[in-house]
Length: 204
Length: 209
Length: 200
Image 1 (tube, chains in turn cyan, purple, blue):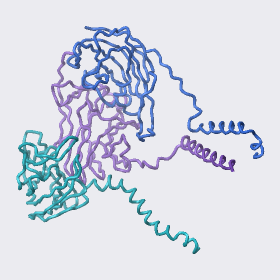
Image 2 (cartoon, chains in turn orange, green, yellow; image 1 turned 45 degrees about the vertical axis):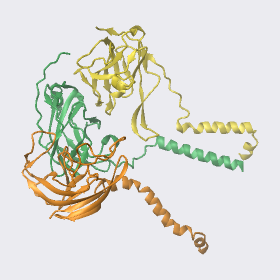
Image 3 (cartoon, one colour; image 1 turned 120 degrees about the vertical axis):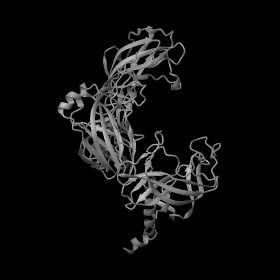
Image 4 (cartoon, each protein chain N blue to C red; image 1 turned 90 degrees about the horizontal axis):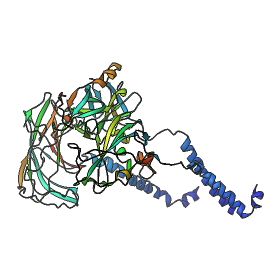
Protein backbone atom coordinates (compact mmCIF):
# COMPACT_ATOMS: atom_id res chain seq x y z
CA UNK A 1 0.00 0.00 0.00
CA UNK A 2 2.73 2.51 0.84
CA UNK A 3 4.41 1.72 -2.48
CA UNK A 4 1.19 2.72 -4.24
CA UNK A 5 1.29 6.04 -2.40
CA UNK A 6 4.94 6.44 -3.32
CA UNK A 7 4.30 5.63 -6.99
CA UNK A 8 1.45 8.15 -7.15
CA UNK A 9 2.99 10.90 -5.03
CA UNK A 10 2.98 13.39 -7.92
CA UNK A 11 -0.21 12.29 -9.58
CA UNK A 12 -2.42 12.65 -6.49
CA UNK A 13 -1.92 16.38 -5.90
CA UNK A 14 -2.15 16.88 -9.66
CA UNK A 15 -5.58 15.27 -9.66
CA UNK A 16 -7.59 18.13 -8.14
CA UNK A 17 -5.77 20.55 -10.43
CA UNK A 18 -6.67 18.39 -13.44
CA UNK A 19 -10.32 18.21 -12.39
CA UNK A 20 -10.43 21.99 -11.95
CA UNK A 21 -8.87 22.50 -15.38
CA UNK A 22 -11.42 20.14 -16.93
CA UNK A 23 -14.32 21.93 -15.29
CA UNK A 24 -13.04 25.33 -16.39
CA UNK A 25 -12.45 24.17 -19.94
CA UNK A 26 -16.00 22.80 -20.15
CA UNK A 27 -17.53 25.89 -18.64
CA UNK A 28 -17.35 28.11 -21.71
CA UNK A 29 -20.97 27.21 -22.41
CA UNK A 30 -21.89 28.53 -19.00
CA UNK A 31 -20.31 31.83 -19.94
CA UNK A 32 -21.81 32.10 -23.41
CA UNK A 33 -25.29 30.84 -22.56
CA UNK A 34 -25.84 32.00 -19.00
CA UNK A 35 -23.34 34.49 -17.56
CA UNK A 36 -23.57 37.09 -20.30
CA UNK A 37 -27.34 36.80 -20.83
CA UNK A 38 -28.52 38.86 -17.86
CA UNK A 39 -27.29 41.83 -15.78
CA UNK A 40 -25.27 39.84 -13.25
CA UNK A 41 -22.16 41.89 -12.67
CA UNK A 42 -22.68 45.25 -10.96
CA UNK A 43 -19.82 47.56 -11.87
CA UNK A 44 -20.98 50.74 -10.12
CA UNK A 45 -23.85 51.99 -8.02
CA UNK A 46 -25.18 55.19 -6.51
CA UNK A 47 -28.11 56.39 -4.46
CA UNK A 48 -30.69 58.69 -6.01
CA UNK A 49 -29.45 62.26 -6.35
CA UNK A 50 -25.77 61.35 -6.40
CA UNK A 51 -23.48 61.17 -9.38
CA UNK A 52 -21.44 58.03 -9.91
CA UNK A 53 -18.38 57.89 -12.16
CA UNK A 54 -18.36 54.80 -14.35
CA UNK A 55 -15.71 53.30 -16.58
CA UNK A 56 -17.10 50.47 -18.65
CA UNK A 57 -16.01 48.28 -21.58
CA UNK A 58 -18.18 47.20 -24.42
CA UNK A 59 -17.45 46.00 -27.93
CA UNK A 60 -18.31 47.00 -31.43
CA UNK A 61 -17.23 45.66 -34.80
CA UNK A 62 -13.70 47.01 -34.37
CA UNK A 63 -13.17 45.50 -30.93
CA UNK A 64 -13.36 46.65 -27.34
CA UNK A 65 -14.06 50.24 -26.51
CA UNK A 66 -13.96 51.84 -23.09
CA UNK A 67 -16.07 54.76 -22.05
CA UNK A 68 -16.13 56.91 -18.93
CA UNK A 69 -19.09 58.97 -17.82
CA UNK A 70 -21.00 60.21 -14.80
CA UNK A 71 -24.69 59.54 -14.29
CA UNK A 72 -27.18 60.60 -11.63
CA UNK A 73 -30.72 59.40 -11.04
CA UNK A 74 -32.70 62.60 -10.49
CA UNK A 75 -35.97 60.76 -9.91
CA UNK A 76 -38.70 58.37 -11.09
CA UNK A 77 -41.98 60.17 -11.69
CA UNK A 78 -45.45 58.94 -12.58
CA UNK A 79 -47.01 60.66 -15.59
CA UNK A 80 -50.51 60.58 -17.12
CA UNK A 81 -49.73 59.74 -20.69
CA UNK A 82 -47.59 57.21 -22.49
CA UNK A 83 -46.15 56.75 -25.96
CA UNK A 84 -46.60 53.06 -26.78
CA UNK A 85 -44.81 53.23 -30.11
CA UNK A 86 -42.84 56.24 -31.34
CA UNK A 87 -43.49 55.24 -34.93
CA UNK A 88 -47.22 55.84 -34.44
CA UNK A 89 -47.75 59.50 -35.02
CA UNK A 90 -50.73 60.03 -32.72
CA UNK A 91 -48.52 61.15 -29.80
CA UNK A 92 -48.88 60.28 -26.10
CA UNK A 93 -52.02 58.33 -25.17
CA UNK A 94 -53.75 58.05 -21.78
CA UNK A 95 -52.18 55.28 -19.74
CA UNK A 96 -54.16 52.00 -20.11
CA UNK A 97 -56.12 50.86 -17.08
CA UNK A 98 -54.29 48.85 -14.46
CA UNK A 99 -50.93 50.23 -15.54
CA UNK A 100 -48.81 53.22 -14.59
CA UNK A 101 -46.57 55.27 -16.80
CA UNK A 102 -43.21 56.28 -15.28
CA UNK A 103 -40.50 58.67 -16.45
CA UNK A 104 -36.95 58.16 -15.27
CA UNK A 105 -34.93 61.41 -15.09
CA UNK A 106 -31.22 60.84 -15.61
CA UNK A 107 -28.50 63.53 -15.59
CA UNK A 108 -25.28 62.81 -17.45
CA UNK A 109 -21.76 64.19 -17.68
CA UNK A 110 -19.15 62.94 -20.15
CA UNK A 111 -16.46 64.14 -22.52
CA UNK A 112 -17.96 64.68 -25.96
CA UNK A 113 -15.62 62.05 -27.42
CA UNK A 114 -17.00 59.23 -25.26
CA UNK A 115 -19.13 56.69 -27.18
CA UNK A 116 -22.34 56.29 -25.20
CA UNK A 117 -24.97 55.31 -27.76
CA UNK A 118 -26.89 52.05 -27.58
CA UNK A 119 -27.53 51.60 -23.86
CA UNK A 120 -30.41 49.82 -22.13
CA UNK A 121 -32.18 51.25 -19.11
CA UNK A 122 -34.41 48.99 -17.00
CA UNK A 123 -36.41 49.28 -13.80
CA UNK A 124 -36.40 46.73 -10.98
CA UNK A 125 -39.23 46.52 -8.46
CA UNK A 126 -39.27 45.40 -4.83
CA UNK A 127 -40.08 41.82 -5.98
CA UNK A 128 -37.06 41.72 -8.25
CA UNK A 129 -39.08 41.91 -11.48
CA UNK A 130 -37.38 43.78 -14.30
CA UNK A 131 -39.10 46.16 -16.71
CA UNK A 132 -37.73 47.40 -20.02
CA UNK A 133 -39.07 50.16 -22.21
CA UNK A 134 -42.22 48.97 -24.01
CA UNK A 135 -41.85 51.44 -26.89
CA UNK A 136 -39.72 49.41 -29.30
CA UNK A 137 -38.96 52.53 -31.32
CA UNK A 138 -38.06 54.82 -28.43
CA UNK A 139 -35.05 57.07 -28.91
CA UNK A 140 -31.76 56.25 -27.19
CA UNK A 141 -32.19 56.37 -23.41
CA UNK A 142 -28.70 57.66 -22.60
CA UNK A 143 -27.83 60.32 -25.17
CA UNK A 144 -29.68 63.46 -26.27
CA UNK A 145 -31.83 63.04 -29.43
CA UNK A 146 -30.12 64.33 -32.54
CA UNK A 147 -26.90 65.04 -30.62
CA UNK A 148 -25.81 61.56 -29.61
CA UNK A 149 -22.11 62.11 -30.14
CA UNK A 150 -19.76 59.47 -31.58
CA UNK A 151 -21.18 56.23 -32.95
CA UNK A 152 -19.60 52.82 -32.46
CA UNK A 153 -18.59 50.81 -35.55
CA UNK A 154 -21.55 48.54 -36.23
CA UNK A 155 -20.48 46.69 -39.37
CA UNK A 156 -17.44 46.17 -41.58
CA UNK A 157 -16.14 49.41 -42.96
CA UNK A 158 -17.62 51.56 -40.19
CA UNK A 159 -15.56 54.13 -38.33
CA UNK A 160 -16.10 55.36 -34.81
CA UNK A 161 -17.01 58.98 -35.45
CA UNK A 162 -19.55 61.68 -34.81
CA UNK A 163 -22.18 61.99 -37.58
CA UNK A 164 -22.38 65.53 -38.99
CA UNK A 165 -24.02 67.96 -36.63
CA UNK A 166 -24.54 65.41 -33.86
CA UNK A 167 -21.86 66.57 -31.43
CA UNK A 168 -22.86 65.97 -27.87
CA UNK A 169 -22.69 68.63 -25.14
CA UNK A 170 -20.63 67.82 -22.00
CA UNK A 171 -23.76 67.63 -19.82
CA UNK A 172 -27.32 66.61 -20.65
CA UNK A 173 -30.41 64.84 -19.33
CA UNK A 174 -32.56 62.00 -20.62
CA UNK A 175 -35.97 60.82 -19.46
CA UNK A 176 -36.84 57.35 -20.80
CA UNK A 177 -40.41 56.25 -20.24
CA UNK A 178 -41.68 52.94 -18.88
CA UNK A 179 -45.04 51.20 -18.55
CA UNK A 180 -45.44 49.00 -15.47
CA UNK A 181 -48.41 47.44 -13.64
CA UNK A 182 -50.17 49.56 -11.04
CA UNK A 183 -49.06 48.91 -7.49
CA UNK A 184 -45.45 47.92 -8.15
CA UNK A 185 -42.75 49.71 -6.19
CA UNK A 186 -39.68 50.57 -8.27
CA UNK A 187 -36.53 50.31 -6.17
CA UNK A 188 -33.70 50.36 -8.74
CA UNK A 189 -32.80 51.73 -12.14
CA UNK A 190 -30.26 49.66 -14.09
CA UNK A 191 -28.16 50.97 -16.96
CA UNK A 192 -26.04 48.77 -19.21
CA UNK A 193 -24.35 48.63 -22.60
CA UNK A 194 -23.05 45.08 -22.71
CA UNK A 195 -24.22 42.36 -20.33
CA UNK A 196 -23.43 41.13 -17.74
CA UNK A 197 -21.95 44.48 -16.61
CA UNK A 198 -24.45 47.07 -15.37
CA UNK A 199 -24.75 50.20 -13.21
CA UNK A 200 -27.31 50.28 -10.39
CA UNK A 201 -29.02 53.49 -9.32
CA UNK A 202 -31.16 53.19 -6.20
CA UNK A 203 -34.57 54.85 -6.05
CA UNK A 204 -35.37 56.54 -2.80
CA UNK B 1 2.72 -12.55 -32.11
CA UNK B 2 1.12 -11.58 -35.36
CA UNK B 3 -1.85 -13.84 -34.80
CA UNK B 4 -2.69 -12.11 -31.54
CA UNK B 5 -2.42 -8.65 -33.13
CA UNK B 6 -4.67 -9.59 -36.02
CA UNK B 7 -7.13 -11.15 -33.65
CA UNK B 8 -7.04 -8.02 -31.49
CA UNK B 9 -7.65 -5.75 -34.48
CA UNK B 10 -10.50 -7.90 -35.74
CA UNK B 11 -12.00 -7.95 -32.25
CA UNK B 12 -12.04 -4.13 -32.21
CA UNK B 13 -13.63 -3.94 -35.64
CA UNK B 14 -16.16 -6.60 -34.73
CA UNK B 15 -17.10 -4.72 -31.55
CA UNK B 16 -17.61 -1.47 -33.41
CA UNK B 17 -19.69 -3.27 -36.02
CA UNK B 18 -21.81 -4.88 -33.35
CA UNK B 19 -22.27 -1.52 -31.64
CA UNK B 20 -23.41 0.05 -34.91
CA UNK B 21 -25.90 -2.80 -35.38
CA UNK B 22 -27.28 -2.19 -31.91
CA UNK B 23 -27.69 1.57 -32.28
CA UNK B 24 -29.12 1.28 -35.77
CA UNK B 25 -31.68 -1.45 -35.07
CA UNK B 26 -32.62 -1.07 -31.41
CA UNK B 27 -34.78 1.97 -30.55
CA UNK B 28 -32.86 4.17 -28.16
CA UNK B 29 -34.59 6.15 -25.45
CA UNK B 30 -33.95 9.86 -26.05
CA UNK B 31 -32.42 10.90 -22.76
CA UNK B 32 -31.00 14.19 -24.00
CA UNK B 33 -34.26 15.94 -24.90
CA UNK B 34 -36.54 15.71 -21.93
CA UNK B 35 -39.46 17.31 -23.71
CA UNK B 36 -41.27 20.52 -22.84
CA UNK B 37 -43.41 21.01 -19.73
CA UNK B 38 -46.83 21.39 -21.31
CA UNK B 39 -49.27 23.69 -19.49
CA UNK B 40 -52.72 23.10 -20.94
CA UNK B 41 -55.61 25.50 -21.18
CA UNK B 42 -58.73 26.35 -23.12
CA UNK B 43 -59.95 29.27 -25.15
CA UNK B 44 -60.55 32.26 -22.87
CA UNK B 45 -58.60 30.79 -19.96
CA UNK B 46 -55.19 32.15 -18.85
CA UNK B 47 -52.29 29.68 -18.95
CA UNK B 48 -49.50 30.39 -16.47
CA UNK B 49 -45.97 29.63 -17.57
CA UNK B 50 -42.89 30.24 -15.47
CA UNK B 51 -41.92 33.14 -17.72
CA UNK B 52 -45.24 34.42 -19.09
CA UNK B 53 -49.02 34.39 -18.81
CA UNK B 54 -50.83 33.49 -22.03
CA UNK B 55 -54.51 33.69 -22.91
CA UNK B 56 -56.06 32.89 -26.26
CA UNK B 57 -58.93 35.36 -26.49
CA UNK B 58 -60.37 34.58 -29.90
CA UNK B 59 -60.12 32.17 -32.82
CA UNK B 60 -61.93 32.54 -36.10
CA UNK B 61 -61.66 31.41 -39.72
CA UNK B 62 -61.12 33.65 -42.74
CA UNK B 63 -60.92 33.22 -46.48
CA UNK B 64 -58.84 36.35 -47.23
CA UNK B 65 -56.35 38.36 -45.22
CA UNK B 66 -55.51 41.85 -46.40
CA UNK B 67 -51.99 43.10 -45.68
CA UNK B 68 -51.56 46.37 -43.72
CA UNK B 69 -50.84 48.21 -46.98
CA UNK B 70 -54.39 48.44 -48.26
CA UNK B 71 -53.23 48.96 -51.84
CA UNK B 72 -51.63 45.50 -51.93
CA UNK B 73 -53.43 42.31 -52.97
CA UNK B 74 -55.27 40.25 -50.38
CA UNK B 75 -53.99 36.75 -49.61
CA UNK B 76 -56.32 33.85 -50.32
CA UNK B 77 -55.98 30.86 -47.99
CA UNK B 78 -54.83 27.65 -49.64
CA UNK B 79 -57.09 25.91 -47.12
CA UNK B 80 -58.64 28.07 -44.39
CA UNK B 81 -57.01 30.96 -42.51
CA UNK B 82 -57.15 30.19 -38.78
CA UNK B 83 -56.76 33.55 -37.00
CA UNK B 84 -55.79 33.27 -33.31
CA UNK B 85 -55.83 36.32 -31.01
CA UNK B 86 -53.63 36.09 -27.93
CA UNK B 87 -52.88 38.25 -24.89
CA UNK B 88 -49.50 37.69 -23.24
CA UNK B 89 -47.41 39.26 -20.48
CA UNK B 90 -44.04 38.32 -19.03
CA UNK B 91 -43.86 37.38 -15.35
CA UNK B 92 -40.47 38.54 -14.04
CA UNK B 93 -38.55 39.98 -16.99
CA UNK B 94 -39.20 40.69 -20.67
CA UNK B 95 -39.17 37.61 -22.89
CA UNK B 96 -38.83 37.09 -26.64
CA UNK B 97 -41.26 34.68 -28.25
CA UNK B 98 -39.93 33.33 -31.57
CA UNK B 99 -43.24 32.01 -32.95
CA UNK B 100 -46.47 30.17 -32.24
CA UNK B 101 -47.76 27.01 -33.93
CA UNK B 102 -50.76 24.68 -34.18
CA UNK B 103 -50.86 20.96 -33.43
CA UNK B 104 -53.56 18.62 -34.72
CA UNK B 105 -54.82 15.49 -32.87
CA UNK B 106 -52.27 13.39 -34.79
CA UNK B 107 -49.40 15.53 -33.52
CA UNK B 108 -48.64 17.22 -36.84
CA UNK B 109 -47.37 20.78 -36.47
CA UNK B 110 -48.53 23.79 -38.54
CA UNK B 111 -46.49 26.97 -38.88
CA UNK B 112 -47.64 30.59 -39.06
CA UNK B 113 -47.85 32.09 -42.51
CA UNK B 114 -45.34 34.80 -43.45
CA UNK B 115 -47.44 36.09 -46.35
CA UNK B 116 -50.34 36.67 -43.93
CA UNK B 117 -48.50 39.67 -42.37
CA UNK B 118 -49.70 38.55 -38.93
CA UNK B 119 -47.45 38.08 -35.89
CA UNK B 120 -44.44 35.81 -35.88
CA UNK B 121 -41.80 36.73 -33.29
CA UNK B 122 -42.50 39.31 -30.62
CA UNK B 123 -41.08 40.81 -27.44
CA UNK B 124 -43.38 40.50 -24.41
CA UNK B 125 -43.03 43.05 -21.60
CA UNK B 126 -43.13 42.39 -17.85
CA UNK B 127 -46.56 42.73 -16.28
CA UNK B 128 -47.88 44.71 -19.26
CA UNK B 129 -50.20 42.88 -21.71
CA UNK B 130 -49.09 42.47 -25.31
CA UNK B 131 -51.82 41.60 -27.82
CA UNK B 132 -50.88 39.49 -30.84
CA UNK B 133 -52.68 37.83 -33.74
CA UNK B 134 -51.22 34.67 -35.29
CA UNK B 135 -52.46 33.40 -38.67
CA UNK B 136 -52.20 29.88 -40.04
CA UNK B 137 -53.14 28.46 -43.46
CA UNK B 138 -54.64 25.10 -42.53
CA UNK B 139 -55.95 22.34 -44.84
CA UNK B 140 -59.77 22.20 -44.54
CA UNK B 141 -59.74 18.57 -43.40
CA UNK B 142 -57.36 19.19 -40.47
CA UNK B 143 -59.33 21.76 -38.48
CA UNK B 144 -61.09 19.66 -35.86
CA UNK B 145 -59.37 19.43 -32.50
CA UNK B 146 -56.60 21.91 -33.28
CA UNK B 147 -54.44 23.07 -30.36
CA UNK B 148 -52.46 26.32 -30.25
CA UNK B 149 -48.95 26.27 -28.81
CA UNK B 150 -46.55 29.02 -27.83
CA UNK B 151 -43.23 29.06 -25.95
CA UNK B 152 -40.05 31.08 -25.64
CA UNK B 153 -37.99 28.35 -27.32
CA UNK B 154 -38.12 27.65 -31.04
CA UNK B 155 -39.93 24.33 -31.47
CA UNK B 156 -38.47 23.53 -34.92
CA UNK B 157 -35.03 23.19 -33.36
CA UNK B 158 -36.17 21.38 -30.18
CA UNK B 159 -35.53 24.40 -28.01
CA UNK B 160 -38.78 23.87 -26.11
CA UNK B 161 -37.29 21.02 -24.07
CA UNK B 162 -37.18 21.32 -20.29
CA UNK B 163 -39.08 24.61 -20.40
CA UNK B 164 -42.71 25.64 -19.97
CA UNK B 165 -44.92 25.61 -23.06
CA UNK B 166 -48.55 26.70 -23.36
CA UNK B 167 -50.99 24.37 -25.14
CA UNK B 168 -54.47 25.78 -25.71
CA UNK B 169 -57.41 23.77 -27.04
CA UNK B 170 -59.01 26.09 -29.59
CA UNK B 171 -62.33 24.28 -29.27
CA UNK B 172 -62.75 23.65 -33.00
CA UNK B 173 -65.70 21.27 -33.07
CA UNK B 174 -66.74 18.86 -35.79
CA UNK B 175 -69.41 21.38 -36.80
CA UNK B 176 -66.81 24.19 -37.03
CA UNK B 177 -64.61 21.92 -39.13
CA UNK B 178 -67.53 21.64 -41.56
CA UNK B 179 -68.57 25.30 -41.67
CA UNK B 180 -65.21 27.05 -41.46
CA UNK B 181 -63.92 26.03 -44.93
CA UNK B 182 -66.96 27.74 -46.45
CA UNK B 183 -66.23 31.10 -44.84
CA UNK B 184 -65.95 34.15 -47.08
CA UNK B 185 -64.72 36.50 -44.33
CA UNK B 186 -61.87 38.87 -45.12
CA UNK B 187 -59.92 40.68 -42.39
CA UNK B 188 -57.14 43.26 -42.27
CA UNK B 189 -53.98 41.52 -40.96
CA UNK B 190 -52.61 42.72 -37.62
CA UNK B 191 -49.31 41.89 -35.95
CA UNK B 192 -48.89 42.78 -32.26
CA UNK B 193 -49.37 45.86 -30.07
CA UNK B 194 -49.69 47.05 -26.49
CA UNK B 195 -53.38 47.78 -26.95
CA UNK B 196 -56.15 45.25 -27.66
CA UNK B 197 -56.27 44.39 -31.37
CA UNK B 198 -59.52 44.43 -33.29
CA UNK B 199 -59.96 42.25 -36.34
CA UNK B 200 -61.60 44.55 -38.85
CA UNK B 201 -63.48 43.10 -41.78
CA UNK B 202 -62.50 44.45 -45.14
CA UNK B 203 -64.28 44.53 -48.47
CA UNK B 204 -62.24 43.35 -51.39
CA UNK B 205 -62.25 45.05 -54.74
CA UNK B 206 -61.35 43.13 -57.84
CA UNK B 207 -58.33 44.34 -59.70
CA UNK B 208 -57.77 43.43 -63.31
CA UNK B 209 -55.45 40.51 -63.71
CA UNK C 1 -8.43 -24.34 -35.26
CA UNK C 2 -5.12 -22.56 -34.83
CA UNK C 3 -3.31 -25.33 -36.61
CA UNK C 4 -5.81 -25.26 -39.43
CA UNK C 5 -5.35 -21.53 -39.91
CA UNK C 6 -1.57 -21.75 -39.59
CA UNK C 7 -1.51 -24.42 -42.29
CA UNK C 8 -3.34 -22.29 -44.86
CA UNK C 9 -1.19 -20.45 -47.37
CA UNK C 10 -0.84 -16.67 -47.06
CA UNK C 11 -3.09 -15.77 -50.02
CA UNK C 12 -5.78 -17.94 -48.50
CA UNK C 13 -5.43 -16.18 -45.15
CA UNK C 14 -5.60 -12.79 -46.81
CA UNK C 15 -8.61 -13.91 -48.80
CA UNK C 16 -10.48 -14.90 -45.68
CA UNK C 17 -9.42 -11.69 -43.96
CA UNK C 18 -10.69 -9.71 -46.93
CA UNK C 19 -14.01 -11.52 -46.89
CA UNK C 20 -14.34 -10.93 -43.16
CA UNK C 21 -13.67 -7.21 -43.57
CA UNK C 22 -16.33 -6.94 -46.29
CA UNK C 23 -18.83 -8.77 -44.10
CA UNK C 24 -18.02 -6.39 -41.25
CA UNK C 25 -19.21 -3.48 -43.38
CA UNK C 26 -22.68 -4.98 -43.34
CA UNK C 27 -24.03 -3.13 -40.29
CA UNK C 28 -22.79 0.12 -41.83
CA UNK C 29 -24.82 -0.46 -45.00
CA UNK C 30 -21.96 -1.80 -47.04
CA UNK C 31 -23.92 -4.69 -48.45
CA UNK C 32 -27.02 -2.77 -49.55
CA UNK C 33 -27.54 -2.59 -53.29
CA UNK C 34 -27.15 0.77 -54.97
CA UNK C 35 -30.58 2.20 -55.72
CA UNK C 36 -31.54 2.08 -59.34
CA UNK C 37 -31.77 5.69 -60.51
CA UNK C 38 -33.32 6.38 -63.84
CA UNK C 39 -34.95 9.53 -65.17
CA UNK C 40 -38.51 9.07 -66.43
CA UNK C 41 -39.97 11.20 -69.20
CA UNK C 42 -41.63 14.45 -68.08
CA UNK C 43 -45.34 14.69 -68.87
CA UNK C 44 -47.87 17.44 -68.22
CA UNK C 45 -50.47 16.51 -65.64
CA UNK C 46 -48.37 13.72 -64.18
CA UNK C 47 -47.86 13.76 -60.41
CA UNK C 48 -44.23 13.45 -59.27
CA UNK C 49 -43.14 12.80 -55.68
CA UNK C 50 -40.11 14.98 -55.09
CA UNK C 51 -39.80 13.95 -51.44
CA UNK C 52 -41.52 16.64 -49.36
CA UNK C 53 -44.15 17.40 -52.02
CA UNK C 54 -46.28 15.90 -54.76
CA UNK C 55 -45.74 18.16 -57.73
CA UNK C 56 -47.75 18.19 -60.95
CA UNK C 57 -46.68 20.35 -63.87
CA UNK C 58 -50.01 21.50 -65.32
CA UNK C 59 -48.96 23.85 -68.08
CA UNK C 60 -46.06 25.84 -69.47
CA UNK C 61 -46.78 29.20 -71.06
CA UNK C 62 -44.63 31.84 -72.72
CA UNK C 63 -45.80 35.44 -72.72
CA UNK C 64 -44.48 38.99 -72.76
CA UNK C 65 -45.72 40.39 -69.49
CA UNK C 66 -47.63 39.43 -66.37
CA UNK C 67 -48.26 42.86 -64.95
CA UNK C 68 -49.08 43.94 -62.36
CA UNK C 69 -47.66 40.79 -60.77
CA UNK C 70 -44.35 40.60 -62.60
CA UNK C 71 -42.72 42.02 -65.71
CA UNK C 72 -39.40 41.24 -67.39
CA UNK C 73 -36.53 43.31 -66.04
CA UNK C 74 -34.37 42.60 -69.10
CA UNK C 75 -35.31 44.53 -72.21
CA UNK C 76 -37.15 42.38 -74.72
CA UNK C 77 -37.13 39.20 -72.65
CA UNK C 78 -40.10 36.87 -72.60
CA UNK C 79 -41.63 35.31 -69.51
CA UNK C 80 -42.04 31.57 -69.13
CA UNK C 81 -44.59 30.41 -66.55
CA UNK C 82 -44.63 26.88 -65.17
CA UNK C 83 -47.98 26.29 -63.51
CA UNK C 84 -47.63 23.57 -60.88
CA UNK C 85 -49.88 21.99 -58.31
CA UNK C 86 -47.98 21.36 -55.09
CA UNK C 87 -49.12 19.24 -52.12
CA UNK C 88 -47.20 18.71 -48.89
CA UNK C 89 -47.80 15.01 -48.23
CA UNK C 90 -45.54 14.80 -45.17
CA UNK C 91 -46.35 15.41 -41.51
CA UNK C 92 -44.18 18.55 -41.21
CA UNK C 93 -44.33 22.01 -42.74
CA UNK C 94 -41.91 22.25 -45.68
CA UNK C 95 -40.49 25.25 -47.51
CA UNK C 96 -41.81 26.21 -50.93
CA UNK C 97 -38.21 26.95 -51.93
CA UNK C 98 -37.79 23.18 -52.27
CA UNK C 99 -40.26 23.31 -55.16
CA UNK C 100 -38.64 26.40 -56.64
CA UNK C 101 -35.23 24.74 -56.60
CA UNK C 102 -36.45 21.38 -57.91
CA UNK C 103 -36.95 22.61 -61.46
CA UNK C 104 -34.21 22.59 -64.04
CA UNK C 105 -33.95 22.38 -67.78
CA UNK C 106 -31.82 22.45 -70.89
CA UNK C 107 -31.74 24.72 -73.94
CA UNK C 108 -34.09 26.91 -71.94
CA UNK C 109 -32.65 30.30 -72.88
CA UNK C 110 -33.36 31.42 -69.33
CA UNK C 111 -31.94 34.74 -68.20
CA UNK C 112 -31.45 35.56 -64.49
CA UNK C 113 -33.65 38.12 -62.74
CA UNK C 114 -31.70 41.31 -61.98
CA UNK C 115 -31.76 40.72 -58.21
CA UNK C 116 -30.45 37.16 -58.42
CA UNK C 117 -26.81 38.01 -59.04
CA UNK C 118 -26.42 35.84 -62.10
CA UNK C 119 -28.18 32.76 -60.77
CA UNK C 120 -31.30 31.49 -62.51
CA UNK C 121 -34.00 31.36 -59.84
CA UNK C 122 -37.72 31.37 -60.63
CA UNK C 123 -39.99 33.89 -58.98
CA UNK C 124 -42.86 32.06 -57.34
CA UNK C 125 -46.49 33.20 -57.18
CA UNK C 126 -49.71 31.80 -55.80
CA UNK C 127 -51.91 31.50 -58.89
CA UNK C 128 -55.13 31.82 -56.90
CA UNK C 129 -54.42 35.30 -55.52
CA UNK C 130 -51.54 36.48 -57.76
CA UNK C 131 -49.32 37.23 -54.76
CA UNK C 132 -45.67 36.44 -54.33
CA UNK C 133 -45.20 33.13 -52.52
CA UNK C 134 -42.32 32.06 -50.29
CA UNK C 135 -43.75 30.10 -47.41
CA UNK C 136 -43.58 27.03 -45.29
CA UNK C 137 -46.39 24.90 -46.72
CA UNK C 138 -48.26 23.17 -43.91
CA UNK C 139 -48.73 19.37 -43.90
CA UNK C 140 -51.64 18.30 -46.08
CA UNK C 141 -51.89 21.70 -47.77
CA UNK C 142 -52.09 22.17 -51.54
CA UNK C 143 -51.36 25.29 -53.60
CA UNK C 144 -51.30 26.09 -57.30
CA UNK C 145 -48.03 27.89 -57.85
CA UNK C 146 -46.56 29.68 -60.83
CA UNK C 147 -42.80 29.59 -61.32
CA UNK C 148 -41.85 32.53 -63.54
CA UNK C 149 -38.57 32.89 -65.40
CA UNK C 150 -37.21 35.31 -67.96
CA UNK C 151 -36.24 33.93 -71.35
CA UNK C 152 -34.31 35.17 -74.36
CA UNK C 153 -36.93 35.98 -77.02
CA UNK C 154 -35.18 34.04 -79.80
CA UNK C 155 -35.14 30.75 -77.87
CA UNK C 156 -36.27 27.76 -79.93
CA UNK C 157 -39.18 26.50 -77.83
CA UNK C 158 -39.12 23.08 -79.51
CA UNK C 159 -35.67 22.40 -78.06
CA UNK C 160 -36.50 23.43 -74.51
CA UNK C 161 -36.62 20.58 -72.01
CA UNK C 162 -37.47 20.72 -68.33
CA UNK C 163 -36.41 18.49 -65.47
CA UNK C 164 -37.82 17.97 -62.00
CA UNK C 165 -35.38 16.85 -59.31
CA UNK C 166 -36.17 15.03 -56.11
CA UNK C 167 -34.81 15.24 -52.57
CA UNK C 168 -33.84 12.61 -50.06
CA UNK C 169 -34.39 13.14 -46.34
CA UNK C 170 -31.38 13.31 -44.07
CA UNK C 171 -32.26 12.95 -40.40
CA UNK C 172 -28.99 14.29 -39.09
CA UNK C 173 -26.27 15.95 -41.12
CA UNK C 174 -23.09 14.18 -40.00
CA UNK C 175 -21.06 17.35 -40.46
CA UNK C 176 -23.17 20.04 -38.85
CA UNK C 177 -25.61 17.86 -36.82
CA UNK C 178 -28.42 19.88 -38.44
CA UNK C 179 -31.58 17.78 -38.15
CA UNK C 180 -34.25 17.05 -40.75
CA UNK C 181 -32.96 18.41 -44.03
CA UNK C 182 -33.95 17.60 -47.59
CA UNK C 183 -30.92 17.12 -49.81
CA UNK C 184 -31.17 17.51 -53.58
CA UNK C 185 -30.84 14.24 -55.43
CA UNK C 186 -29.40 13.47 -58.84
CA UNK C 187 -30.33 12.55 -61.60
CA UNK C 188 -33.72 14.25 -62.07
CA UNK C 189 -36.86 12.22 -61.43
CA UNK C 190 -38.44 13.30 -64.69
CA UNK C 191 -37.14 15.25 -67.66
CA UNK C 192 -38.07 16.00 -71.21
CA UNK C 193 -39.85 18.27 -73.62
CA UNK C 194 -43.41 19.44 -73.07
CA UNK C 195 -45.48 21.71 -75.33
CA UNK C 196 -45.17 25.39 -74.43
CA UNK C 197 -48.26 27.48 -75.07
CA UNK C 198 -47.30 30.80 -76.61
CA UNK C 199 -49.35 33.86 -75.77
CA UNK C 200 -48.70 37.41 -76.94
